[in-house]
Length: 480
Ligand SMILES: [Zn+2]
Image (cartoon, rainbow, N blue to C red; front, side, top):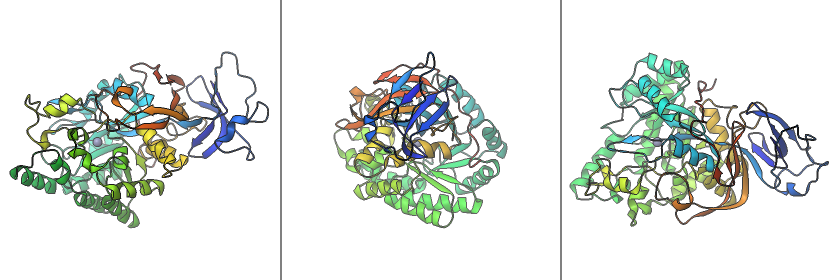
């Protein structure tokens, strides 16, 4: 396929360029306009002959006119929880519906967290999860979760199988949290074997005590969910994780950073020389903490909780400044009935806020919501592509195969129409859920065409892919 007339935006910047997608599903040629050509926006007026050109299409080659559109690498969402069991219920998107929705929103790679229970062999859990993920419609990789200490050879084996990052929780003492000694030991293993430690940074002990207090005082509603997870306990955990990483000389990745306080902590660690990357999520850029107090407050429960305006301001600024490296989704949707029944699936409804499953849908809306930041004057187009595609690919060992439009990269690309309007109401989206955190929002900017390894998987809002098209991505060790 030849893609002509578009404005390519990737790690190399925004410029007029034509692309040829090879029969092997990779970018075969890139023909850039000369320096005198307009860099962006006004490419519509060029006529054949004075713009970039490959000459005639080859026999059988399709031509796509991307005049006036952006051509960007497919999005890389390095934080999903597809199909994950949560107590007696399960995340509502499976690997097919979740990755179909991802593709429809312009994301062509996901990296999903393998759920691991205490007492379970993480490597066996990863093998089982590969079978679950095999129905994915776009390419996928895996992170492991270590809810307890593991042997060094577990880390070594995981890395050699392309699972080069693992998640440690500093919260959820009853099922996921591990202590500082185990964190430090795992950081040393990660350092030796080229793995990246991802951390959920909230102080689990402090939160558990605040929850006990709230429940004993009869504060059982979801408003207490946010009140028992204050930003200072997030910031503390970032500082502690970074201190342990400094001792271990290990790189770390802070998932779903949500607050100004936590960002300050992350920046302080970086100024000491820590190799620390942070991710935020669209919900922390857009949604106000008071949403949990509304009629459908349960639908806004996530951890860390939604924060306030000062936090959102800091996160946008941090993204633009490169202090926050990536935007992931923490995609973790539920049906409304399951939210209300709670993780113990009670017919009378969840007993209190601790039983309400936490997590929001997001895999389909991430690219558009961060792109909206460009219209809001928060980010540049390059920032958008960097935080949503390039940096997640780089950090998680997928670059330049993903997150790039260089010759040789996978032809995972999106023709993005900056004028296309799209409602973010659940009824207009494709994630397996019956509510949307952005029910009243309409964005301007949405995919027109999406390619996965050269195959058209979305055209004009219609999904043209299939279950199982997605391939497992063995990821490279961190920084290698
Ligand atoms: Zn998560």
